[in-house]
Length: 276
Image (cartoon, rainbow, N blue to C red; front, side):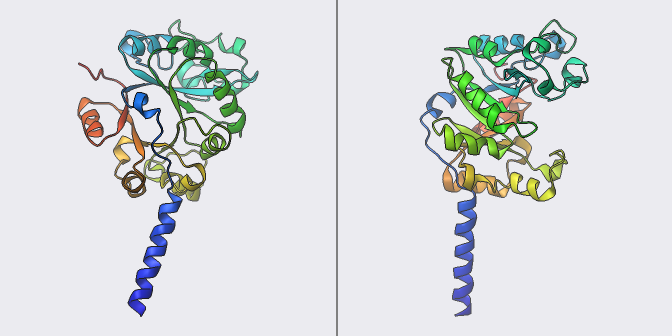
């Protein structure tokens, strides 16, 4: 009787664990999205004066038949900037937060000492219209996840671009599930506690995020996980049980790209040309 009770408890716990990791699968958009490799922040090359998340980097990705991954922030005037960091210190040498700028003020800055401006999302989408697809990362700051996600969706609606959306913030995915369920949505994650990432988030929050324990609320179509952390148990279970699509970031060698693709994963790459 005791053995049967233990087996029953194990089965119940396994079912609960599986429900926590709930993923959605079979989105028809994968027929197109799955055909491409994605250049991380565009096909940038610092040595050639092509900054990350610049129009030059995005043109180069298109010219080489790659999709692109990009990052979106909400400006003070409600418009959308394509840049990775909230601070412009690393990318433009200015100690200012992008959320504190208007679109007009944003255009005063230049990327990495070049003449390249920080693009608006509408400028990038016009470039990709009827071309290669995008992985759009939502960079929520200061609790603006709903406003930023809504504005990004409305901007994407204006252009004939194939895309999916992702974020480290599960509130973004929850908003998409409730308001735009037709959009392909993905949870970004990694082993935060191992790498010391996560900013000011508490350890419990980081533990939940790295183990995908908010999936039951957000039901992502894909998991975008750091390549070096891809053996994480909960990620493996999402793949095995739900057959969810995995995307690996950031691939920086052809050997790693081959490994990821052999496992059935899509790749976000940088610092090398996959075709050479």
